[in-house]
Amino acid sequence: MVEAGKPNLADYFPLLRKMDPQGVRRRMTVHSDNLLKLFGNMMDERQQSRKSPDYTASNDVLDTLLDIIEGDIEELNKDHIKHLFLVLFVAGTDTTSNTLEWAMAEVLQNPHVLLKVKKELDQVIGKGKPIEESDINSLPYLQAIIKETFRMHPPVPLLLPRRAGSDTDLCGFHVPEGSQVLVNAWAIGRDSSIWENPNSFMPERFLGSEIDVKGRDFGLIPFGAGRRICPGLPLANRMLYLMLGSLINSFDWKLEGGISPKEMNMEEKFGLTVQMAEPLQVIPVVI
Ligand code: HEM
Image (cartoon, rainbow, N blue to C red; front, side, top):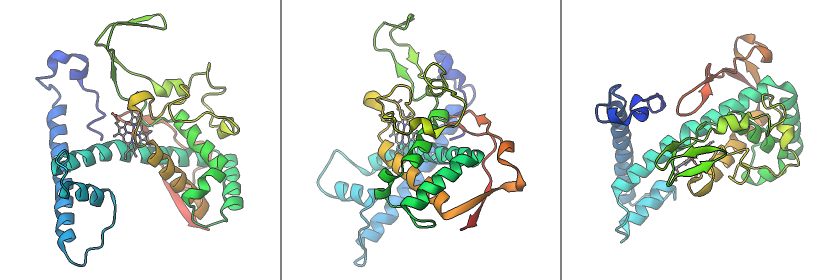
């Protein structure tokens, strides 16, 4: 992921693409091949165990896809599945874990938010009890925290690049056909003409508001919008509610090194995804 996020001269000067002057493409090919090998081995192992008479189907994604290719569908083969897993791995892991890390960091930096969400969880779920997917709708403040985290820290800050299909005039700018267009979701989230106090973490702004991350409200588009909106959105959202809610409801948290919330380093490190420059280090205390 670190390699994929490095600026590549060849993206700005396409003539250099064949030369690969920084070796980015060469190294990325090695990383992708290693991952494809890993997924290939996992598939072989699973296919082997599926042959055993004691095998109980787990009905996970791999089992479901293997059922399909072992049937008589020719459009999908093992190679497709390996590449599908590669895409899901690259698109779905750092994005979700970075959001969780930012959400925890913001909540811990803002003790009044922590107090409020703990109260909500206590009232709806009960202190220390596990959260179920069906509880999410009854936790508006937890939902607001996730939205506010996406507004301030969209993990894919420039979304995925677009190419203009034809000459276009947009907000006074001429965009020639074939240009690469980047949408800066990070800057939209910090735009003071859209958001009041854009640099303050205020989940309350989403309480009683219809604004959502599903691509209809262009002020908040961490998953993109339109035909190529992130297909992992429903999964990522559910995982985030469950993980953040469980971490907050099951533990008290202490900042490592005895630092106070105000001393936390909230600087960002730019890459394929925006990470915390200094990873969050916190100690769970069992409730
Ligand atoms: C917090 C979590 C996530 C965020 C913020 C996120 C964000 C994004 C964004 C911004 C795009 C590009 C959309 C566009 O440019 O319009 C994208 C594409 C994509 N995402 Fe996610 N994503 C997340 C989690 C996931 C997960 C969990 C998966 C799958 C398990 C996933 C799979 C994909 C795929 C396959 C694409 C490419 C879709 C296409 O090109 O048509 N994402 N995601």
